[in-house]
Image (cartoon, rainbow, N blue to C red; front, side, top):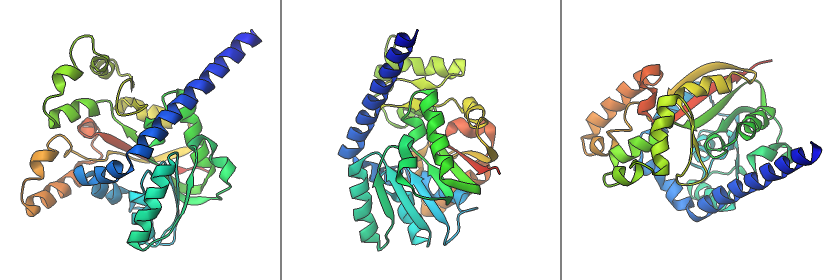
Length: 287
């Protein structure tokens, strides 16, 4: 029995190391593209900040775990927050520091695994952002540990901001970008399982841009309920705008602003959550 358990543990460690190496390699090679992602998809940032800035104030300590090339870190540093960025990819960290210097701000930055945050001795923060790890870690135990590590850095009464890629995001991508759906969702292709997972209420674990797990929207609150958090919000980070994004960007600035304001009002309607590619849970840490 002990031998079998040891073999399973060793297999789990090897698989996790392979996942981390895959994710690190992807972002080391694509930091510029990830930085530009929020320019190609311009609604996620203003709608997400609209919700986050209900709580985050100048002078607050903000920990950005898995913050990639630093879009959110730089924003909050400009706002006057004391920011620390942690990301698995050294390439992302170098890129973020370069962009921070160009923006005239500074923050602490570490290339580290989100499952080993306790080794950094960062202290406590008013706000902790977990906006990447939960859709790159595939196994339940790893995702649970990522949240637990984030909460160790969060002071009592502080807020956790956890992001998920929704499992309808693959279909939304093909709705927005022609020429992919036939190859992606043909019978027998691995990605075709995504539709079955949606119908069965399961998370999707399969081929994508890197090691990924896309969450069924109904599974987010049960997953987060196991932690000492009081739910404040669950919302779609692109709101209702993701599916029609390319067409909407061709319209006048006034019409775009109007749609953003409409999207803000509808962000937390549960029935509309799957219209977004990403969802964010905001929870307050209990005493």
